[in-house]
Amino acid sequence: MKYEGYIKRQLRQVEEFKRLEDRALPRTIDYQSIPGLRIEAREKLEKIRPENFGQAGRISGVSPADLAALMIYMETKI
Image 1: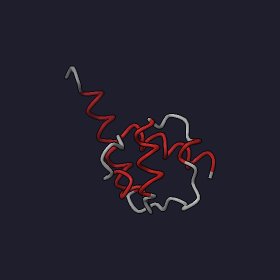
Image 2: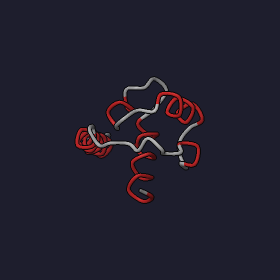
Image 3: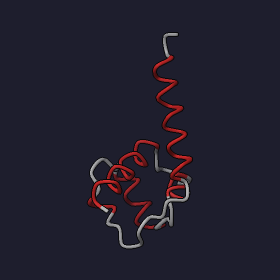
Image 4: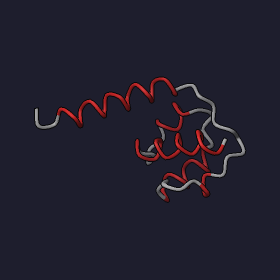
């Protein structure tokens, strides 16, 4: 019961990530300008240039928080 709220939130995030798995990322996206991304994630995303969120999520060094920041950026800027 103590962690029920946290677990529900995580389950919602998992469902959201599944839904966005195939959502394309533009080839021209400037990862350096996305607020909330950690430096390591910026570097790896710039180097690898994933085609979609699913690929981005499987990159070592890209955390769920980085994906959340990327999702927010995509919804507001692009």
